[in-house]
Length: 252
Image 1 (spheres, rainbow, N blue to C red):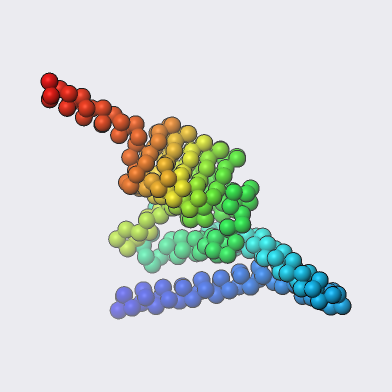
Image 2: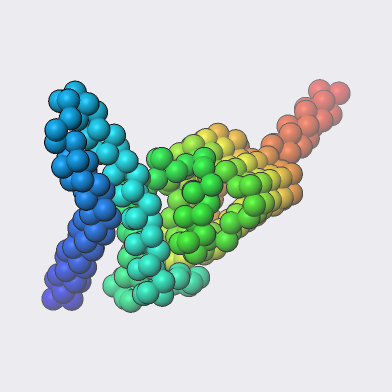
Protein backbone atom coordinates (compact mmCIF):
# COMPACT_ATOMS: atom_id res chain seq x y z
CA UNK A 1 0.00 0.00 0.00
CA UNK A 2 2.78 2.44 0.93
CA UNK A 3 4.59 1.76 -2.35
CA UNK A 4 1.38 2.44 -4.29
CA UNK A 5 0.87 5.73 -2.46
CA UNK A 6 4.45 6.77 -3.23
CA UNK A 7 3.94 5.94 -6.92
CA UNK A 8 0.73 7.99 -7.02
CA UNK A 9 2.46 10.91 -5.27
CA UNK A 10 5.31 10.76 -7.79
CA UNK A 11 2.83 10.71 -10.67
CA UNK A 12 0.95 13.73 -9.31
CA UNK A 13 4.20 15.61 -8.77
CA UNK A 14 5.35 14.75 -12.31
CA UNK A 15 2.09 16.08 -13.75
CA UNK A 16 2.57 19.24 -11.68
CA UNK A 17 6.04 19.70 -13.17
CA UNK A 18 4.64 19.18 -16.68
CA UNK A 19 1.97 21.79 -16.02
CA UNK A 20 4.58 24.20 -14.68
CA UNK A 21 6.71 23.60 -17.78
CA UNK A 22 3.75 24.35 -20.04
CA UNK A 23 3.07 27.60 -18.18
CA UNK A 24 6.74 28.66 -18.22
CA UNK A 25 7.39 27.81 -21.87
CA UNK A 26 4.06 29.21 -23.04
CA UNK A 27 4.43 32.46 -21.10
CA UNK A 28 8.04 32.92 -22.25
CA UNK A 29 6.99 32.35 -25.87
CA UNK A 30 4.18 34.91 -25.71
CA UNK A 31 6.22 38.13 -26.29
CA UNK A 32 7.95 36.56 -29.28
CA UNK A 33 4.62 35.43 -30.69
CA UNK A 34 3.37 39.02 -30.46
CA UNK A 35 6.46 40.17 -32.35
CA UNK A 36 5.82 37.65 -35.15
CA UNK A 37 2.17 38.71 -35.36
CA UNK A 38 3.21 42.37 -35.54
CA UNK A 39 5.75 41.62 -38.29
CA UNK A 40 3.11 39.63 -40.19
CA UNK A 41 0.59 42.48 -40.06
CA UNK A 42 3.07 45.29 -40.82
CA UNK A 43 4.54 43.48 -43.84
CA UNK A 44 1.17 42.57 -45.34
CA UNK A 45 1.60 44.75 -48.43
CA UNK A 46 5.32 44.09 -48.89
CA UNK A 47 6.93 42.02 -51.64
CA UNK A 48 6.31 38.29 -50.86
CA UNK A 49 10.02 37.44 -50.63
CA UNK A 50 10.68 40.45 -48.42
CA UNK A 51 7.73 39.50 -46.24
CA UNK A 52 9.03 35.96 -45.80
CA UNK A 53 12.45 37.36 -44.87
CA UNK A 54 10.90 39.71 -42.30
CA UNK A 55 8.88 36.87 -40.77
CA UNK A 56 12.02 34.69 -40.57
CA UNK A 57 13.95 37.47 -38.83
CA UNK A 58 11.11 38.08 -36.38
CA UNK A 59 10.90 34.32 -35.69
CA UNK A 60 14.62 34.16 -34.88
CA UNK A 61 14.34 37.26 -32.68
CA UNK A 62 11.30 35.71 -30.98
CA UNK A 63 13.39 32.70 -29.95
CA UNK A 64 15.99 34.83 -28.18
CA UNK A 65 13.27 36.92 -26.57
CA UNK A 66 11.81 33.61 -25.37
CA UNK A 67 15.13 32.58 -23.82
CA UNK A 68 15.68 35.82 -21.91
CA UNK A 69 12.05 35.87 -20.76
CA UNK A 70 12.30 32.24 -19.63
CA UNK A 71 15.38 32.98 -17.52
CA UNK A 72 13.54 35.89 -15.90
CA UNK A 73 10.47 33.74 -15.17
CA UNK A 74 12.52 30.86 -13.73
CA UNK A 75 14.40 33.29 -11.49
CA UNK A 76 11.13 34.85 -10.32
CA UNK A 77 9.67 31.45 -9.38
CA UNK A 78 12.87 30.46 -7.55
CA UNK A 79 12.77 33.64 -5.46
CA UNK A 80 9.01 33.48 -4.94
CA UNK A 81 9.11 29.90 -3.63
CA UNK A 82 12.43 30.27 -1.79
CA UNK A 83 14.03 27.39 -3.70
CA UNK A 84 17.50 27.46 -2.20
CA UNK A 85 18.96 24.02 -1.51
CA UNK A 86 20.79 23.16 1.70
CA UNK A 87 23.19 20.34 2.48
CA UNK A 88 21.63 17.32 4.13
CA UNK A 89 19.78 14.06 3.59
CA UNK A 90 16.12 13.99 2.54
CA UNK A 91 13.79 11.03 2.35
CA UNK A 92 12.01 10.15 -0.89
CA UNK A 93 9.29 11.37 -0.83
CA UNK A 94 9.59 14.47 1.37
CA UNK A 95 9.38 18.23 0.94
CA UNK A 96 13.18 18.42 0.81
CA UNK A 97 13.29 15.93 -2.08
CA UNK A 98 10.42 17.69 -3.87
CA UNK A 99 12.19 21.03 -3.45
CA UNK A 100 15.34 19.54 -4.96
CA UNK A 101 13.38 18.14 -7.93
CA UNK A 102 11.51 21.40 -8.50
CA UNK A 103 14.67 23.48 -8.35
CA UNK A 104 16.49 21.31 -10.87
CA UNK A 105 13.41 21.16 -13.10
CA UNK A 106 13.52 24.96 -13.44
CA UNK A 107 17.17 24.78 -14.48
CA UNK A 108 16.40 21.89 -16.84
CA UNK A 109 13.77 23.87 -18.76
CA UNK A 110 16.37 26.53 -19.55
CA UNK A 111 19.11 23.98 -20.22
CA UNK A 112 17.05 21.98 -22.72
CA UNK A 113 15.46 24.83 -24.63
CA UNK A 114 17.93 27.74 -24.58
CA UNK A 115 21.19 27.33 -22.67
CA UNK A 116 23.25 26.28 -25.73
CA UNK A 117 23.04 29.90 -26.87
CA UNK A 118 24.42 31.42 -23.66
CA UNK A 119 27.33 29.06 -22.98
CA UNK A 120 30.73 30.81 -23.03
CA UNK A 121 28.99 34.17 -22.72
CA UNK A 122 28.55 36.36 -19.61
CA UNK A 123 24.92 35.21 -19.53
CA UNK A 124 25.86 31.69 -18.39
CA UNK A 125 27.56 32.78 -15.13
CA UNK A 126 24.73 35.29 -14.64
CA UNK A 127 22.12 32.53 -14.91
CA UNK A 128 24.07 30.38 -12.45
CA UNK A 129 24.14 33.30 -9.99
CA UNK A 130 20.42 33.93 -10.42
CA UNK A 131 19.79 30.27 -9.56
CA UNK A 132 21.83 30.54 -6.35
CA UNK A 133 25.39 29.59 -7.34
CA UNK A 134 28.32 31.61 -6.01
CA UNK A 135 30.27 32.49 -9.15
CA UNK A 136 33.43 34.60 -9.24
CA UNK A 137 34.73 36.95 -11.92
CA UNK A 138 35.83 35.90 -15.43
CA UNK A 139 34.34 32.41 -15.11
CA UNK A 140 33.85 30.46 -18.35
CA UNK A 141 31.02 27.92 -18.42
CA UNK A 142 30.71 25.64 -21.45
CA UNK A 143 28.38 22.97 -20.09
CA UNK A 144 24.69 22.78 -19.39
CA UNK A 145 25.12 19.54 -17.40
CA UNK A 146 25.30 21.29 -14.04
CA UNK A 147 22.68 20.75 -11.35
CA UNK A 148 21.96 21.84 -7.77
CA UNK A 149 23.28 25.31 -8.58
CA UNK A 150 22.60 26.80 -5.14
CA UNK A 151 25.14 24.30 -3.74
CA UNK A 152 27.83 25.24 -6.26
CA UNK A 153 30.74 27.63 -5.68
CA UNK A 154 33.03 28.65 -8.56
CA UNK A 155 36.09 30.83 -7.98
CA UNK A 156 37.48 33.64 -10.14
CA UNK A 157 38.84 32.62 -13.53
CA UNK A 158 37.61 29.01 -13.34
CA UNK A 159 36.67 27.10 -16.50
CA UNK A 160 34.01 24.38 -16.79
CA UNK A 161 34.72 22.58 -20.06
CA UNK A 162 32.33 21.30 -22.69
CA UNK A 163 29.80 18.68 -21.54
CA UNK A 164 31.36 18.50 -18.07
CA UNK A 165 28.96 17.26 -15.39
CA UNK A 166 28.92 18.99 -12.00
CA UNK A 167 26.33 17.80 -9.48
CA UNK A 168 25.87 18.21 -5.74
CA UNK A 169 23.47 15.32 -5.14
CA UNK A 170 23.40 11.56 -4.95
CA UNK A 171 20.60 9.05 -4.35
CA UNK A 172 21.42 6.60 -1.56
CA UNK A 173 19.03 4.07 0.03
CA UNK A 174 15.88 6.02 -0.69
CA UNK A 175 17.35 9.39 0.22
CA UNK A 176 18.58 12.43 -1.66
CA UNK A 177 21.98 13.41 -0.26
CA UNK A 178 23.09 16.99 -0.95
CA UNK A 179 26.70 18.15 -0.54
CA UNK A 180 28.31 21.39 -1.70
CA UNK A 181 30.78 21.42 -4.57
CA UNK A 182 33.58 23.98 -4.48
CA UNK A 183 35.61 24.80 -7.58
CA UNK A 184 38.45 27.10 -6.63
CA UNK A 185 39.96 30.06 -8.49
CA UNK A 186 41.54 29.33 -11.90
CA UNK A 187 40.50 25.67 -11.79
CA UNK A 188 39.97 23.87 -15.10
CA UNK A 189 37.31 21.16 -15.25
CA UNK A 190 38.12 19.39 -18.51
CA UNK A 191 35.92 18.24 -21.37
CA UNK A 192 33.43 15.50 -20.36
CA UNK A 193 34.72 15.42 -16.78
CA UNK A 194 32.41 14.50 -13.90
CA UNK A 195 32.50 16.23 -10.49
CA UNK A 196 30.42 14.49 -7.82
CA UNK A 197 28.95 15.91 -4.59
CA UNK A 198 31.17 17.04 -1.75
CA UNK A 199 34.18 17.62 -4.01
CA UNK A 200 36.56 20.50 -3.32
CA UNK A 201 38.97 21.56 -6.07
CA UNK A 202 41.86 23.73 -4.88
CA UNK A 203 43.24 26.81 -6.57
CA UNK A 204 44.70 26.28 -10.07
CA UNK A 205 44.01 22.54 -9.99
CA UNK A 206 42.90 20.71 -13.13
CA UNK A 207 40.79 17.74 -14.15
CA UNK A 208 41.90 16.23 -17.44
CA UNK A 209 39.29 15.45 -20.09
CA UNK A 210 37.01 12.56 -19.14
CA UNK A 211 38.04 12.47 -15.48
CA UNK A 212 35.52 11.20 -12.92
CA UNK A 213 36.08 12.78 -9.52
CA UNK A 214 34.44 10.68 -6.81
CA UNK A 215 32.26 11.97 -3.98
CA UNK A 216 33.90 14.07 -1.25
CA UNK A 217 37.21 14.24 -3.13
CA UNK A 218 39.77 16.85 -2.08
CA UNK A 219 41.96 18.12 -4.90
CA UNK A 220 44.94 20.10 -3.66
CA UNK A 221 46.22 23.39 -5.02
CA UNK A 222 47.78 23.06 -8.52
CA UNK A 223 47.19 19.31 -8.59
CA UNK A 224 46.25 17.56 -11.83
CA UNK A 225 43.85 14.61 -11.78
CA UNK A 226 42.97 12.18 -14.56
CA UNK A 227 41.25 8.87 -15.18
CA UNK A 228 38.22 6.89 -13.98
CA UNK A 229 38.15 7.06 -11.03
CA UNK A 230 40.30 10.19 -10.77
CA UNK A 231 43.87 9.86 -9.57
CA UNK A 232 46.57 12.42 -8.99
CA UNK A 233 49.31 12.73 -11.60
CA UNK A 234 51.75 13.56 -8.81
CA UNK A 235 50.83 10.49 -6.75
CA UNK A 236 50.95 8.29 -9.86
CA UNK A 237 54.48 9.46 -10.64
CA UNK A 238 55.58 8.95 -7.05
CA UNK A 239 54.24 5.38 -7.11
CA UNK A 240 55.95 4.66 -10.42
CA UNK A 241 59.26 6.03 -9.09
CA UNK A 242 58.90 3.94 -5.94
CA UNK A 243 58.21 0.80 -7.98
CA UNK A 244 61.28 1.45 -10.12
CA UNK A 245 63.42 1.85 -7.02
CA UNK A 246 62.06 -1.40 -5.57
CA UNK A 247 62.74 -3.20 -8.85
CA UNK A 248 66.30 -1.84 -8.93
CA UNK A 249 66.89 -3.00 -5.35
CA UNK A 250 65.48 -6.43 -6.21
CA UNK A 251 67.68 -6.74 -9.32
CA UNK A 252 70.76 -5.73 -7.40
